[in-house]
Image 1 (cartoon, helix red, strand yellow):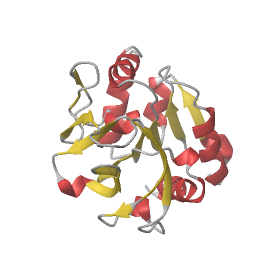
Image 2: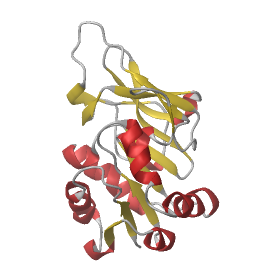
Image 3: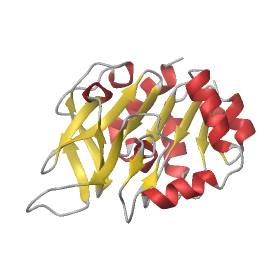
Image 4: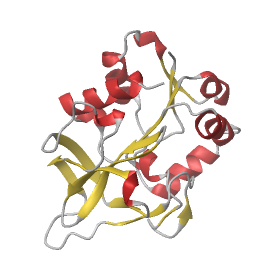
Length: 207
């Protein structure tokens, strides 16, 4: 097993890497990388993300050959892929944060501002998950389990079946998305204690 955590300049990735190292049988299999060659050899691909949608997309595009390596591994070879926070949002067709920007388009839908009348934005802190559809990524995770969120925008899935788990904060929003080997979490697994570690362990068990 080899896990490539893509570093495209979106914040400190060490907390995500440490969480993966905790649940991996071999911690040396976890690599934070800017190299498309490393991604092209990985059994699992992880795209974290912190900050604005447009900045994250621009940072990813600035790595020559990276998107092509991701598409080869994930879309054509079917390697397990996990997007985290903005990394999950970039899976969708476009984002509307400070303008309209194209995403990867691997899942159908758009990233829109949270509408939560009377509640603070961003949605920050612990909230309960509601499991919508069974999936290997959510094995052992149940409705009512807690996860840690920090976001002002959410992924509006065009296909309801892509919403594996939801969260309620002024509106019902996708907390976990997935279609086949392509998966993403709006919350931060590395900050979500037992729930997050279980999800990461489930991801690493997928082939």
